[in-house]
Length: 211
Length: 113
Image 1 (cartoon, rainbow over the protein chains, first blue to last red):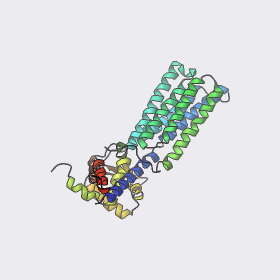
Image 2: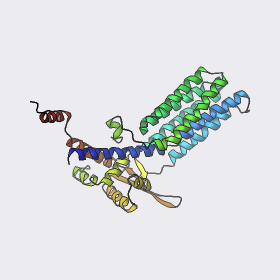
Image 3: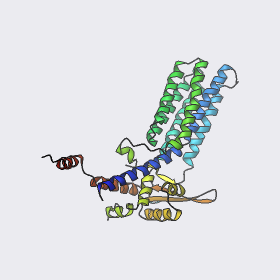
Image 4: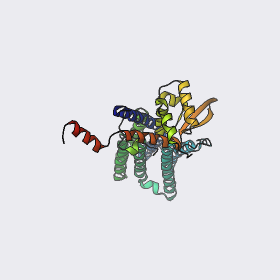
C-alpha cells in the first residue's frame, strides 16, 4: 500500500466518522424541546408581568419545565436492554440524552425550591436557567463536533448576563426572552442538516471518539 | 488465544463496506439497519452480509425489536470493534513516514548532503 492509498484510506475513515457524528446531532431533539420550553417560560413570565395573561409564575414555570423533563425521562427509560453479548459501548447519543436530562433535573429541582421559598419572584431564575442552557449547548457542541453550536451557547450566556442585569425591567427582559426561541429553534432546526457538513476534527481524540 | 486477535482484524476491515460501518458506528455508536445502509450507500443484501460478518467477529452488537409491528435491527459498535478500528488506523499511520524521515527523503531528493 503506497502513501497515497494510506492517506486516502484514512480520509475515508474520517469521512465515515464524521457521518456518524452527524447522525448524533440529528438524533438529539432534546436541545430543541428544552430550549423552546425555557424560552416559552420567559415570554409567558413577561406576559404575566405586563398583565396580559393572569398566570402565576409558579404555574408558568411548572408548565414549561415538567413536560421537557418528562420527555427526557421517557427517552432515557425507553431505551431497551442491550443484547447479552458482545456488549455495545456506551452510546454518545445516550451521553447527549444524559446531559439534557441532567439539565432538566437541575432546572427542575432549582425551580421547585424557588417556588417553595418564594425566591422565584425575585427574577434571577430566568438568568440562571439561560446560563445552564448555555452550558448544555456548549457541551453538546463538543460532543457532536459542531463548532457553530458554541455560538448558540455564547448567545445563551449573553442572554443570562442581560437577564440578570435587567432584573425588574420587563421591556428589557422580553427582548432577551424573545431571542430564546430563535436561539433554540435555530439550533434545533439546523442541527440535523448542519451536522452532516464536513468539518475537520480538531484533534485525534475528536476523530476517534471511541478511544 | 487472546480476546483481541490482530491477524483477524486486517482481513475484516480490508473491506470498504465493513470499514465504513465500523468507522460510522465509532462516532454514532448505534444506528438502525436502514440508517447504516443509507450511510454507506449500499444495498440491503450487501449491508446485511457485511453486518453479519462483523457481528460474528464480535465487532458489532445487534439488538432486534419490533417498532410499530415492524422488525428493526439496531447495531452498536462493541469494545472489540472499537479496538479493531483503532488498531487498523494505527497500522495505517505506521505505514506513513515520520516527519523526520520525510525531511530526510526530501533533502536526499534535493541533493543535499
